Length: 236
Image 1 (tube, helix red, strand yellow):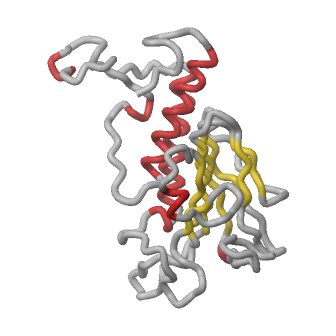
Image 2 (cartoon, rainbow, N blue to C red):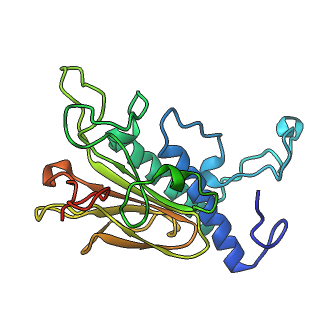
């Protein structure tokens, strides 16, 4: 664990803001992962037991739920609702089978791409680099190994997830799309409630330090295509 500069409670606004951002990062990581998200009652409002793991016998403020929310906890509740809604509305996040790293339906696109900020695919050397703190995930919406009750393939939005665990801001290059659509930012943990939805004018995004952002693109607006540049995803 990390206290971000001070052990225990603090009034330092920079430390408080960073701690809140890390809470949003942890929650987003949970709801963007495969499997069933396990959320403990109270997590949605930032409830803490102060490190006490035997609070079941504490009939006091250690175990009580305080529903008198201040602005900070109300914002976190709003963020929790938003990330839950995001997961519920995005089929690529609710698949029941493991990612395979290959085309699912004969398409040239794989079901997942692990990318560096410059858009190039991660190599074995990149994965083995202990100092690598920045990466992105591309999840094509037409490469889900699932079918609806009518036997039709499940298709959803294509998502791009940018992760920056570094202490400095990083620029991410998103795959180029055709002229009929653009990437839309739908979540940024640098914002207290996830930030407003924002359409990108260019296929690049400056992500603040220790933050995570999610972008969507309606598959009907055109699918990302492989460029002539080896390993990069996006049209030339």
